[in-house]
Length: 99
Image 1: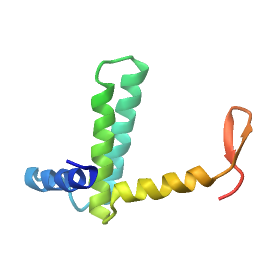
Image 2: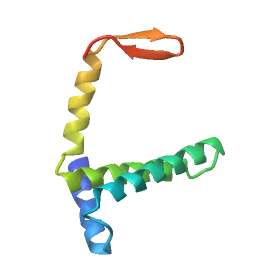
Image 3: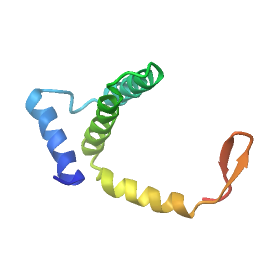
Image 4: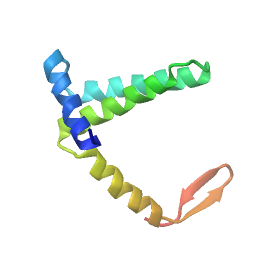
């Protein structure tokens, strides 16, 4: 199964299980909670960090499908854009010099 099929399958699972498919704000809040869980798993060196990262991906794909975006296509376009950007280091951070 490729990522495009997976995104569609994740959406179908949401439909089949009766999960939220209309409240975008709630999905972003749930995604935020999943990011917090992944960070907590990392911070505490738990064995389930991979599962928590997977939850983040699942929520991203669900939100993408909800909003009508092909997440793979969006990631590829953004990756190309990022590769062309120039950054400079300011302290401990990299700051974008151009778009």
